[in-house]
Length: 589
DNA sequence: GCCGTTTTCGGCCCGACTGTTTTCAGTCG
Image 1 (cartoon, rainbow, N blue to C red):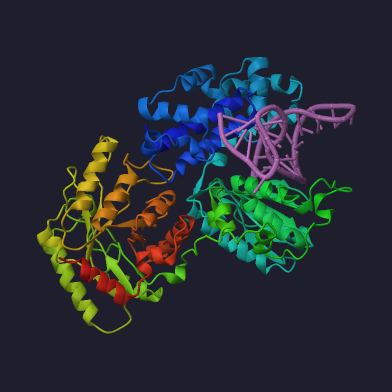
Image 2 (image 1 turned 180 degrees about the vertical axis):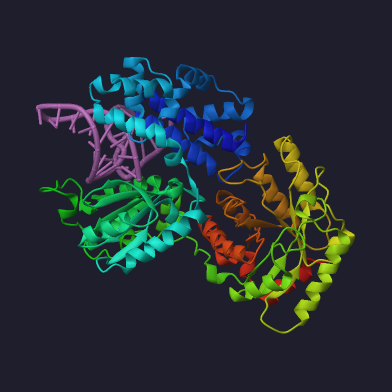
């Protein structure tokens, strides 16, 4: 079984155990074990072989055995039994907001309910309201939860959420009553998909802020409206929370709601070890009970915490960028002063992998070069599809070589355009050979090599050796491995492929790897870049733009690169035009 | 189920909100 599948399986076991009423800490152990597996820094098979899997933080004796069984046989008796003991309907019910494992268990045990339909009927007949601990309101909430669960449960692309979030943030900051405002949550951590939006505002006058927030024209429903918190839902199902706090608590709320949960747990443990207690309302001396009332009335144990950096400093840590707060090893790195200086959008000098009208893009070479210059980029690589991608109007050798000439012509003109590099997105065919041979590709400045067809039906081994063959191919020019897994977020999983082996092969053959910044792709995934960086494989952030507007995707890609912990030095297209030109020339043979 | 510069056993982050209750369990982030 693939590593990702094993992680999913552990996560599922956690969920199932929750429904059995198992110790919540055991549940969390499975969930954090899944996380540990997802962000493993070494090859799983090597760890198993060398008997070192148990040394990974979060994976102990029991999980080691289960992971080995899943990896080597794809089976786990413990899981099969557990799975069989719990009806599918109960798992599905977890999607109903406010209806958690304990309540689900109760309706199952007391009323024998096993499916969503039975639950709905029991709500409507009044049987749910009669259960001890339940009431009329509970039944109503379950019913509306069932009706809305598809919209509520949906995740959204980071890029789509950004277009909702930024105008709201701007609107909040313009309000007279607002001192400070930020977006928190997984959006601020630049996760590739976002569940809902969290806004944190510092203000001494919450009412007008809440009023503005809940009164926005694109709000379809106000789901909560309290003293410090309001929740709304927009068209399309995206939900947003607004929290208004006093200015001296802003940093704590912002940090808390930025998360991640695992990061917060580690921060609090660290605070406890220093005799302090950390929460979204502040930092307090441990054991000192709140004298009365709300937590935000309690005096803080430390004064002068104005920015998040001050908070980290109290815990003797360097500032940890939001992107890195996933509860992995960021606290250790911050303690040792080893955090990377993350790449910024302004560091980019150019980009690669863009399409024009010649294949399936919407703009001309000139349009693209001009738009790139308008964004402050010094160069832009074109990589239209090759002939095998006939569905995308891929170029044959003649058309491609014509384009190469045309690019040289445009480059010789003076003006308002970024320098064009001639490339091609060459298809990796089913057998791992490339769609164009060396006689064509050696006339290019570079090529992107990507899989576009025959994605399913191949085993992990077959796909891996197919792609490695392409990585090793002699093209006579620099190769960039394009979207290495082919995933489309929220739509389809990537194909089965051993990313670690691809990285090794790339390192051995001087091949670069793309961070495809198309919001649906974000491929290669941020979780793999540390291995690539350690192997010395540069990252190329590319928008895979099919129009001038798509060049903006680069911003999305920079966020993903930051999440991956990459520095400007590790991103190829932060190099100046001169250095890039030199690099491309050196790669020619 | 994991983990150890208080611990190999006994902990494991913290607070608000909701709906149900007369003091709290469950859920959520």
